[in-house]
Image (cartoon, rainbow, N blue to C red):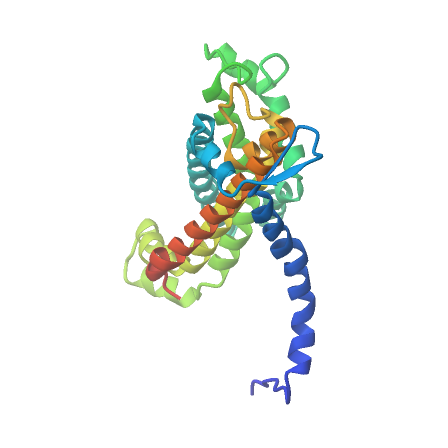
Length: 293
């Protein structure tokens, strides 16, 4: 018999929620409120005087062609990273869920990249694809491909997409594997008895049952590509060449630190936060309807 916990008052539940609420307040709501306030301010070059300029930072931002270029870069980058990381992780999870010799070693090796910091992951891929030192870059050049992410914006974008995808595959793999192992074997066995082939079993039975996991990972991956890929882009390309890999989150950093435009940088962070919240809300509004729990 399942035992349920009952509280006679609100004191104990409030105490249990207090640590998480305090962390959320200190590390999310307080910085977010400061960013909103900073976006309405304009500082001089020396940071001595500050003026309240209302929406001037936002007007200047939306009249800057470089911001729209960063927006397009973010759309391309996020689309490819989400599709590649989710599809490759699902393929690996399906393979790891089978009865294979040495499956535990296989699973462990797939989990390792998740422990690598984004900056370290970027450095690893930078060394492998460096046009003068990288072994993989030399292999591409031997095939007649003039690989040079330092000068070619498409090559640079491809490199950061590969690095970001590699970093996220392990996280997606863990959840996909857990989702596959939670599917009742009796359902699969019944499909086998009915004569359903492996591909048909996967698309008509397994994948629909993985829809809650897929929906969760889709939301998490959107947040990942918008925020957590900063370290990869910073170490691999630094937003170059000529802003070809400058995403929205990296532009917040470059304009704030490099350009000393704290008000404009804060306005960009507010817009980025609103975009991510809006995209998440749209996913919950429309995509979640197709999820089978």
